Length: 124
Image (cartoon, rainbow, N blue to C red):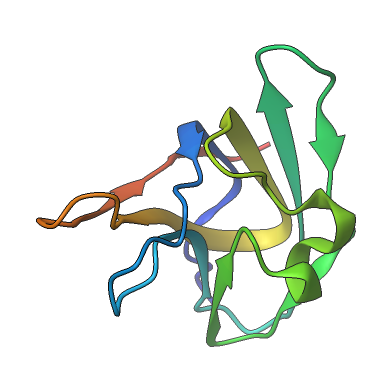
């Protein structure tokens, strides 16, 4: 059976916005789609301008499921949640091919902005 996706993904522009006062709270998300037949174990490495990289513990994305993880959620990132307004990049590594998307909702202004981007993905 054909497998879809890539095992390694890079996102060079991470920057967690504050929650803000709007009903739609500012956040950023890492969205992982596993359309394949086997569960995927992923790890995320965060890179910074002024400190050493940090890696999350393994996060399971079940077969044929999607997981949306906000970078401030301890249930996914533990003590590696991202601080407000910190510039970083990230690498997502998986045991199985996956598809990864990054999204940010910035509600610091009245005309809030939301955007998503696909990362740069490749196989080992």
